[in-house]
Length: 159
Image 1 (cartoon, one colour):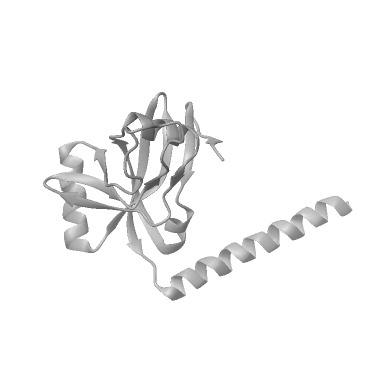
Image 2 (spheres, one colour):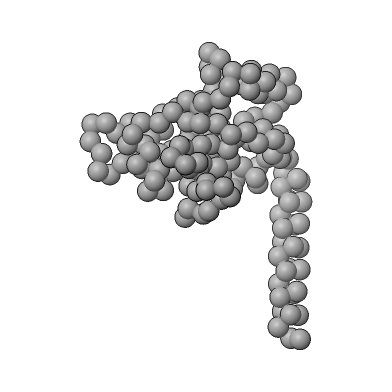
């Protein structure tokens, strides 16, 4: 499940549903505050970003709805899998994002989770919601590209 990314980064989980439901305007990188057993569970691939989003409380940003499965060999130190995870960003970035979310109707969505060296990082997207017709348009474009690729592949085998 874990793919390779450039510069020694190893992708753990991706939120493909976010690209279907939102237009991603900008991307940001943030650290994430985790317990030791959560990191071990992440190394095993026990993460789901599907319905997660970010919220602001007291000048801090939290990932809500990010599911990290309990570590199987863990004990009393296992944490609640659905707890809000604190994201680590510079204060200026947090204030900027909070202003955009409040004024312009953007939302912050975790797009992927990856290891950068020994640290777990989250790629956040500044997103604007898609309407139903936008989703249909995106699906039609993707389908057309698949058909073109399929026909080009068939043509290359004939010659």
